[in-house]
Image (cartoon, rainbow, N blue to C red; front, side):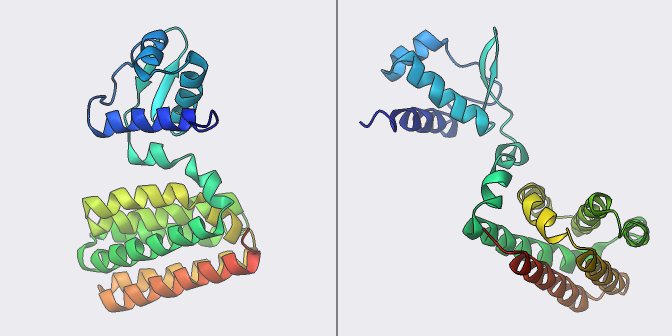
Length: 227
């Protein structure tokens, strides 16, 4: 085997052990010398493989204590991919496709299920967005909160898990598309339309408004220029 691919092979074998549940969240891996002997590789190769898994948030290397399997939470596992996706236009396009599927499902259910308290929160966020239109960072945080409340109102556990991942992976696209004040003003209008449709408990109008908003996001990204 090519020396450069050996750490990748070792990392893959360790991932297989985790998938097979031979190693579980919180487990401490065997000592480096023992693990290297078991894998039939040198300790430097093993260290390189473990470093890769550490970057992926699969293992936690604790100085003086050993190496442990992390909690393996989806959002934690994908957090490092935001940088990768920000440099890869194909991967970013797939994030946007996935976001569309999840967000349209969320808003359709939210229009049917939203509570008075959640509706009040959405309304308050739109008012705060109007005030924050000149503050890109604050606007972005409120934008995420707006979509998260819709997800909460949808009351679907699996959609919520997907949304958590999308929030993480979509950070790069939000930073790029939200840089211009003109775009933030359009987002504010979009959110007003989404809120109006949800307030009327009109699932069809809510889906249409969300789809138009996501179209707007994709056009802004195309204008900004993908890598």
